[in-house]
Image 1 (tube, rainbow, N blue to C red):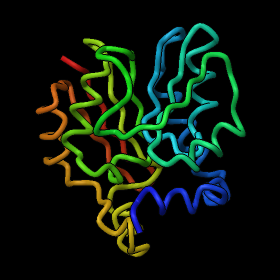
Image 2 (image 1 turned 90 degrees about the horizontal axis):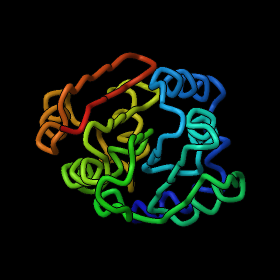
Image 3 (image 1 turned 90 degrees about the vertical axis):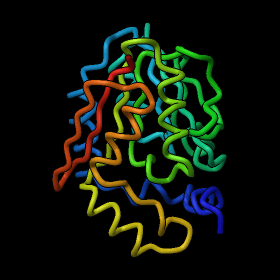
Image 4 (image 1 turned 45 degrees about the vertical axis):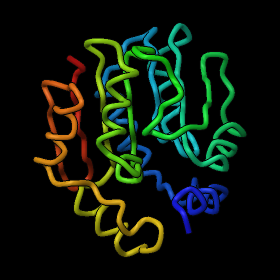
Length: 197
């Protein structure tokens, strides 16, 4: 089974797998990002849109959220739940983001990065669509070891969807043109952040 089929098949039940505690962790992480009101944010790998209401609230009515996913059924679930005038859903791959150069102020990527087929290309694309000085934030509401163990145990389409070790992540994002890269890896959170040069 391909990854896209895997996520399409799970889309209808996806939200039932996300516990309140995880939602709370994600809310804390989005709050800590302190997104500017009026900014344009790309939610890359939005899935069923778990971050969308948090991002919409953060950027305010003058901001814009663009939510992209490669699995059409995931997007269909997200669209059923959320309609705002400043929210746009697009189907697309992280390795070929359907946005113009320097189109957004922020890229956030929650619980999706290890699922991209080509991590270097995805990081390069994040850099391309960000304006100069824009920020990338790649995060998970769990540690790297937890996520990697989970994906291995699930097997099948996601068994090789692993977060690389720290020095590899630094290399991927610095080569893509990011600086001031920081990485936190703790039991209940994983966060890589960097600014486009």
